[in-house]
Image (tube, rainbow, N blue to C red; front, side, top):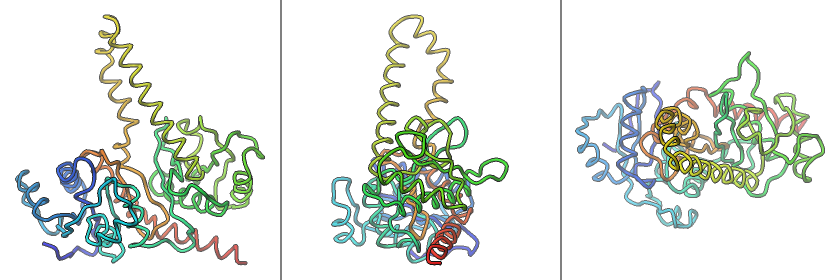
Length: 351
C-alpha cells in the first residue's frame, strides 16, 4: 500500500491525514468525497492502522489507482515549535506530505493544522521557486464578484519592495489561472495602503507602489484601502505579512461579532424569531459565502509545488475544497507560469 504508482496523466495530491482538530475522520471523508468527484490520485499520509480503520468504518473498498496510504507515524501538534518539530520528527505526517511533492511523487499538498509546520515543511522539503525571496500566504476573501486574494496574510512580518513585487506577480498568475477576469484582462493588482492617492503610506508602501507601477506585465490599479478587502475593487491585494494578518484577523473578528448581533436581534422578539425562520435559508447561504471552508484554506505561494493549508478546524467540506483548489492550480499550470513570470522579471532586472 505504500508504493506510489500513478497514471502519467493523473494529478496526484498528498494529503496530511493526521492534521487538524477533526483528523483523521473528517480528513478521510473529505478525501473520499474528492475522489468521488474528481479524477485524482491521493497520497493519504499518516498512521496506516488509524487511516485504514477510518476507511473500513466507512465500508470503503478503495483502489490503489485512486488512493495510496503512505506511512508516517508521528504528528506535529499545534503547540510545538515548527522548526524544532520538523527537525526532530522527520517522519511526521506533514513532513512526509511535503516530501511527496519535493520528490515529485505529487504535484500538490494539502494539510490542516499548524500553519507554521506546513510552511516550514514546504520550504525545507520542497524549496522556493527561482526568483522568490520568501514564500507568502494568500487568503481568498469573499466579494460580490470573484474572490480577492490577500497576499501576504502572515508569513513575512518584514518585507522589502522587491518582495511585495514578487507577491504581486505570484498573485496575478494564481488568480489568472483559477479565477480569470472577464474580457481576458489581467487580474487587477492593488497595494493595501492607508489611502488611495499615490504618495500615501510609509516608505515601504511608496517604494513598492513605484515598483509595481513600473512593471508593465501587471495590471496595477494603485492603492487599495482596508474597506476594499471585500469590495471586489482588486483581484489581488498586496501587503506585508504584518499588515495582512492584522487586516485578516480584524475581518474575522468583525464577522463573528456581526453574527452574534444578528442572532441576538432575531431571537429578542417574536417578530424577529418569525423573520429569522423565514430568512433562515438566505442567512445560511450568506454565511456559507464567508465560510473559510468554501475556499479550502490559505495558499503558500512561492514554493516549487502547490500547497494549500486548511484551517485547523476544517471539516470534510474544507478538505474537499482544499483538494479542489490544489487540483485546479495544477491544471492551471500555476507553478510553471509563476516560474516564467519571475524568471523573466529577474532577467529584465539584470539587463
